[in-house]
Image (cartoon, rainbow, N blue to C red):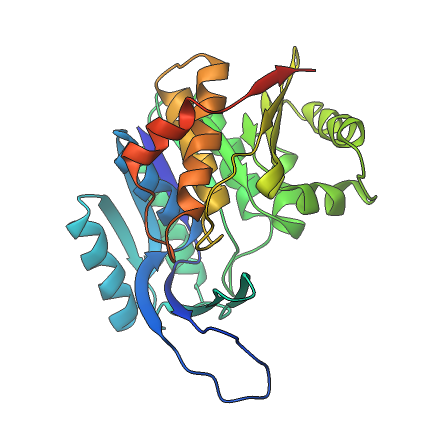
Amino acid sequence: MIITLTMNPAIDHTVSIPDFKVNHVNRITESRYDAAGKGINVSKVVKGLGGRTKVFAFLGGDTGDYIKKSLVEEKISCIAIETSEPTRTNLKIVDPDSKTYTDINQTGAYVSEDQLALFRKQVFNYLSSQSLVVLTGSLPPGVPVTIYQELISDIQAIGAVAVLDADGEAFEHGLKSGPKIIKPNIHELELYVGRKLDTEDEVVQAAKELLAFGTELIAVSMGAEGALFITNNCVYRAHGLKVSVKGTVGAGDAMLAAICYGRDKNLPIEETIRLAIATSAAKVMVEGTKSPDFDTIYDLKKQVKISVL
C-alpha cells in the first residue's frame, strides 16, 4: 500500500492563454480545475497504474470539499484533517504559443498544533511495516520545517519505507533521517550541495554524497533530458522521450508515483526506471494536473533507453 502525505494540497486552476503578456489584458481560451498537491498527484497516478493508495491531507472549506469529492470520484481513499481556513487554489498559466508554463501558488491554509498532532495520529494508526509512505510537497503555515525529518524517523522505525520529494529546508532536514528513496530535480540537488552541476558526472557525484544518509535510491529528474538513478551499487542513465508537451505540472509527481509503484510491486530496477520515464512523459502530454493516459504509458515504456554508467 502506498500512502501519500499531502500537507499543503490545492485545487489547480489551469488556464490556457495564447500569446500571454504581462501588463496586458489576456483572454483565457481553456480552463480546468483539478484536485492537486504533490501527494495527491502521486496517488492519482498510482491508482491509474493499478496500485493501492491512500491519501492523508489537510483540507478545509469549499475547496477542501471539492478535493474530497474529486478523490471519491476517482475511487481514491482519503483521510482528511480539517483546517479552519479553506484549502488554497493555485493558478497555472499555459501559453501554447510560446510553450511557457507559469505557476502562481498561494501559501496554504494555516495548520494548528492540534491539527498537526491529529494528522500524525491518523497516519500512524493506519501504517504497518508493509507501507510505503510518500512525503512530498511544500509545508503550510504552522507546520515546522523539521516535520518530514520527524515523520521519516518514526515511519522507518516501524519497518515501513519512507520516500521524500521536497525542497529547501524541508528537504535538508528530511534527508537527515535517511529516507529510502528521494527524488530531487537537478535544481533542488544543486541548491542542496551548493554548487552548479554542469555535467552528468557532477550530478552523479553530488547524488552519491546523499547516499551517506542511508538512502537506497536517488532519482534525479532532469526534465526533457530524462533522469539519473543512483544506488549504492549502480548508476543508470535513462534518456527522455520526445513527446508533444501540453503542460509540465505534475511530471515529477508522475515519475515518483511510478518509482513507488515499482518498489511496492518489487519490480526489477530497470523495469521501474522504464515505467518512471514513460509515466512522466505521458503526463506532460495532457493538460493541467490531469492524470496521464495509461495506455500511452505502456506504449512509451517500450521506447525508453537505459544505459549503465
